[in-house]
Length: 282
Image (cartoon, rainbow, N blue to C red; front, side, top):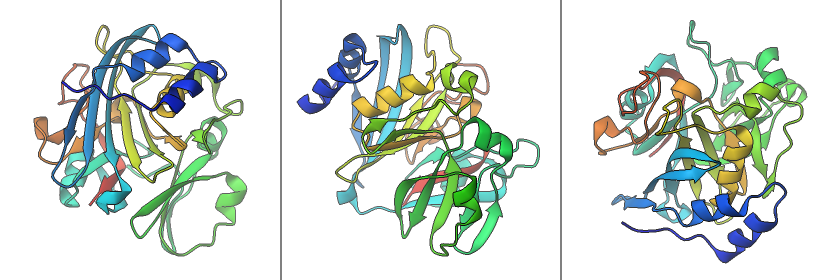
């Protein structure tokens, strides 16, 4: 088993940031991270950390380094399918579930635009509760951007794909302000999914499991943001969580599902929920 030690600069940040907890920082830094690197250059890291945020946390992430010269895509709008199924159909190497959606109709309830075609728009409820960001993909490169009603109404760019989500958790290296978001959603622990980028261009797909007593407590948004920051996030955004949370890697056991999706209420790899859209790597 290999331990991943983060940079001293991040340790210093962890000890001085507002609300930081020295013990939690060290638990993340010194965790017994199990590390696997694929032939294509993707890195999977997994750890179950006891005592983190006074709980047990099950964390999985996939790192996509800029040097691997891979492309990140957004797929969806074909009805609800499991993340593993959508990823396989796209010939992907890795994938994570996407943003919020209507579980009856299957469409996104957040802005979804492919080039000049708007497929879905953000509902007022999502704007009020949590959506303040988006992920924009152009030619396989992504960026996390601010999002609101005004930006959406006036968005005219016709190249690339945009999928809104939120809340933004880390913005230019700083923990975000969620005072305008739904307090219960922010503070309640759930399984969570997120994407973040590092200064060196690395893209990270991150999942945190939950709803399994003794195995995985889930995280609040402040806890997830703190974790992402300690792991090196420069910009980070929350995706759909709960039973949707799924991280997938081609060729991995259990049909490629790396985390413990909670939709079957069992701590195994078989509880995937069908979702509207995904982010994937080719």
